[in-house]
Length: 193
Length: 193
Image 1 (tube, rainbow over the protein chains, first blue to last red):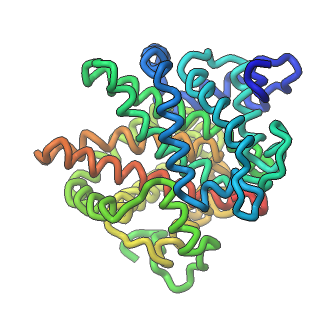
Image 2 (cartoon, rainbow over the protein chains, first blue to last red):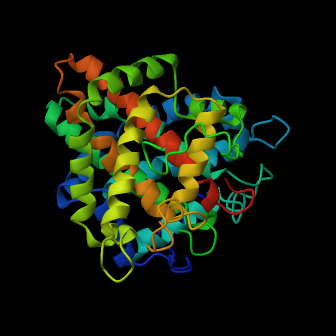
Image 3 (tube, each protein chain N blue to C red):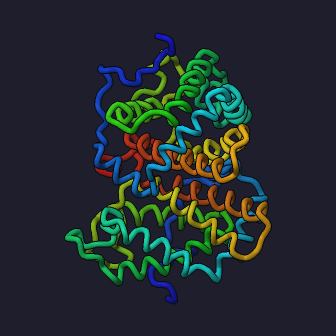
């Protein structure tokens, strides 16, 4: 496997508990349109050769906050380098998937998997590490801000007119909120999602 | 009481289960700074005489989507006008509170109360209505997008330079994400928040 732990489209991946109809309704709540799909693909073209720089920025942000880096540590204050590295590679792929993947059953299934990997259900399992057991829901939601705000300068780096940058950025913002909403599934009490 | 059901600062309101220290850490995760506090107050000055127009827009958005209006109905497709109206008044106050209230224990306690009022724990109780029992977590999170994106034109309406509008808008975005993160508390399984 080229990308360790990356199981997108794996036939063994369980289906999402969220239906395509529920996804469609959720997207209506965030004003999703076909324009966003196009703008995300455009964003993907802009971002694809900048992924390492984006990850450098995100990792330096997390690394500079001990209470965030905590979720990559052994719980005794020691970051686990191979865990950081494996997650980083998948995080880079996530940027591309966010831009290029169609929102179908395979996409929904992998969104659910990502949620489980943040939640105590499956955290650490994919990478076989002994890190802290769970990333709190409040941080999953809070990260909508940095992951959205920090991408904008990268979207603006290829000389697109301001309206195009804005369109790409709004689509990215929606795509991040949508995914965090889906990732919250394993955190919610029965029936609360 | 001037504003029915508005219990901000009420000494009878239980304290939030979230500590000021946890709040501080959460704000660090969304890159909160003192600049944001200032920018939010500026935003409040800009928005305070536009609150009804903002609410018109938000209500027309919800009203035009039956699956969202649903949470203001009796569950048989009939919206409950007095419920819509009472929530609307508090929603207007919420815009101002978001901009002007300091992030202290009273603020935290009311954030927790807002979460409970969306969750099945307390939905409908404040207004004594027989509406559907619960607003799903996924919609709480999804609403970060429309509530953030649609405010920008209102922030730009008073002739501020683009940098000031941007600063106010980023602070608003952070403030909305922060609150939704706090509102998720009653939805999360024990220990998952």
